[in-house]
Amino acid sequence: MIRLSSGSADDTRAIAAGIAGVLQPGDVVVLDGGLGVGKTTFVQGAVAALGNAAVVTSPTFAIVQQYGGGPTEIAHVDAYRLDRVQELHDIGFDELLDGNTIVFVEWGERVRAMLPDDRVTVTLTMAYEQGAPADDRTLVVEHLGDSWLARAPELRAALSRYEVRH
Image (spheres, rainbow, N blue to C red):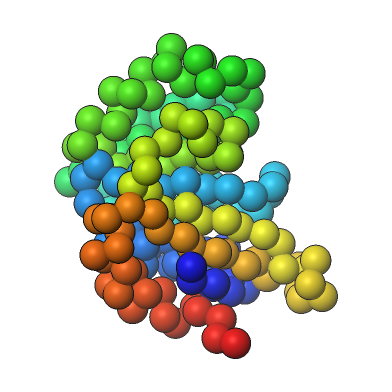
């Protein structure tokens, strides 16, 4: 687990860019946290860092946005409005896990049963709950699976600037 501090939307995008630098086609990044904590801002930073010029907006109503036109296929899923996990099957989520697409899943805790074992989870929280300025956020990055175990040192190095050291 890596605990990070973000003092602005630009910091959140930079953290996402650091993680994006370690991503490979087929990876899944799960984004958890309440409304307005910066999940879509995170995806904006990652998509830009992956070399895609797409305008990233929240896919809350569309559920899935796909961003082609870059070196890697990217899908951005928002599970907030899903009533049942079956709805994720119905929209073709399984096909997104094709090994060629990098998939970002907002509100991943709602569809945890559908997620692959090998993934990165980023949990974003507002730091003002801890007495910090209003723009401050805490991001906790957890990686699961063999491929992430092998990339853990590279991931930590990419995020070291933002790491909270205790």
